[in-house]
Length: 288
Image (cartoon, rainbow, N blue to C red; front, side, top):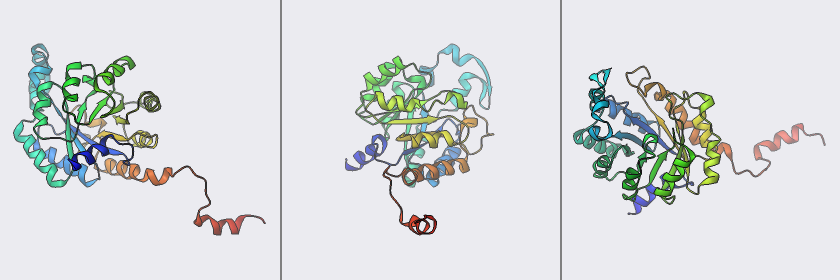
């Protein structure tokens, strides 16, 4: 129980020096070996957690949607694609085992109630509500009933929709993520100042889920007080897949984590002082 509370405090607390989530999502392209390489990449670069996406395909999508033509590495229909990207219990057993072996937390964005039950069997550290699911009130209630920390992204959502979601979830166990749901996001649509709006409006911690090219906006978000940063990761942005181009490769992830971890020292405490290192310079340069 003490360990669970400690983990929850890292996720939903403002005192932890930024909780960094590596979003693997569907960038594994249906390969458990690729997924494990991405988990190792996140761990080796100092991320706190990795996140996947879980769907019950026949619940989330209509028959008509699944029958639509769509060329992919899995076949010629949208259903071939969606089913090809879904991991089964066999793969998630391996993910759970591998993350425990490395000592990195993991959880998932569940897109339907059945998927919440599926992921809950692994006693994950938290649950994520994807931007696309923010208005699925039944799903929100299902996730709230787990009593786990909840992270919710706000992309493609109006302020009224966000307010309703927060009303359902409550603020005690919640982190609200500012997010723009374009992949990749243009600079003029990132709107980091909305983090300030969220911090003023709600009492819970505020995070940032970025889909931008590069790392600068995510680092700035952390400097503005975002308690959590979530970024998609990939082994190579040229790999097949819709999310790869908005993802960080190993070198970019390493730089992002390094810069965020250095922010606490860089930002300081806001108190003006003369540092010991300045005294010799002061003696040398100041006129008496």
